[in-house]
Image (cartoon, rainbow, N blue to C red):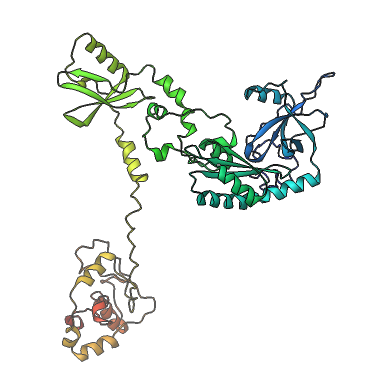
Length: 487
C-alpha cells in the first residue's frame, strides 16, 4: 500500500520508495495500524530519559515490543534486526517514546517486564536476505495449497511469513475443525527445505492480514485501525431494524460485520423509552398488532389481523396512553382516532415526480419535423400567411384548369404582365375567410386619374388581385380561374 500523497510503490519493508518521512507522515496510510506520534516534535526536559522500549512492525500488521538496550538512536521507519528464536528477525520501527508505554498498557503488556531486545540497525546484507525471502513467499503459498489438497485436508493456507534471516517460515491457516497436519509438515519440510511452523488464525484475523475493500468502499477496518475484535450478534441487527440477510450482514471474513457494533449504543439509548415491537393494543374492533417502528421519529404503525394491509401511524406518546388505559381495563373504540395526520405535500410530490422520476428517461423524445422546402413565389407575389397556405394545400388539385383556358387568353396575360420594377406587393386575403389580417393599402388609389399610356398596366394590376400562389400539386401553373382574363 502506498501513501496517498506520493502514490508510489513500496519496497519490501512496506515503506514507499523515496519517502522522506520514512513512512511516518501525517496521513498514516503507508503502514497498517500505524500510530501518529504527536509527541515527536516535543523536547524532553533536562535529566529525563526516554522510554527504552520501541514498537516494531512485521508483515501484515504484526507488531511486537522490543527493548533498546544499546540506547540506539531509533526513529520511526528505521529497519532493525530483532531477537527471535532461533536467529533474528527484520522489522520496521513504528513507534518510539512515551506513547509506547500507552500502547503496551492498551494491549495488557507490562512496560517494565521482560521483553525481547533489539540487536542492531539492519545492514544492507540483512535487508538483501530479507528481500529474497519475501519474494519466495507467494510461489510457496501456491505450492503449499496444492499439497494440502492432495492430502485432502479441510484447511485453507492464507499466508506465509518468512523470518528475517530466512531460517523459518510460518504458515497461517484457517479451518473449521481440528486438523491433523503432521504429515503436512513433513511434506512442507521436504519440499521447501526450511523450518516449518503452523499457526491457526480466525477468519477475522485472516481478513485483517490480507486486507481488502469493504461494501462501504473503504479499506477494511480490521486491516487499518481496528485492533480488538468484539463479538457481533444478530441482536445488533435486530435492534437497528436491519433485514437478517446473511449476504448483506456478513463481511469478507464470512462473519457478521464489525460495523454493526458502531451505532448499537445510539439505538439502544433511543429504544429505552419506546414500547416493545410486540406491543398489542386492545380495541373494540379487536387487537391491533405492531407492524413497524421508527426509532428516531418516535412513531409506530399498527394494523388489525383482519386487514393487515391497512396500517395506522400512531406516535409513541399516544401508544403509551392507550397501553395505560388497557392496563386499567378500559378498551378504546378504535385506533383511527389516534392516527397522526400527515401534512399535505402535494406540491412537493408533484415536483419530485416530474424532476426526480426514475422513468422520465424511458420514453424517447419526439423528433421535431424539419420544415418543408417551400418554393419561392414567381413574380411580385408575396407569401401568404400560414393559415392561407394550409388551406391551399388541403384544396384538391385542379388538373384540368389550364386545359380549359384558351391559349389566346394565356398569351394575352403574359404580354400584358406589368414590369417588375418597384411594384407594390399586394396580398390576396379575400378568398380566405379565416384570415383576418389587415389589407395593405394599395400604392395607387382606384379614383386617381390614369394616363392613357398606362392603361394596360392598371388593368393588369387590377387583375393581379385575383392572382394566386402556384399550387404544389399543379407545379408552376397558377390557380387562377379562367374568368380572370376577360377584358
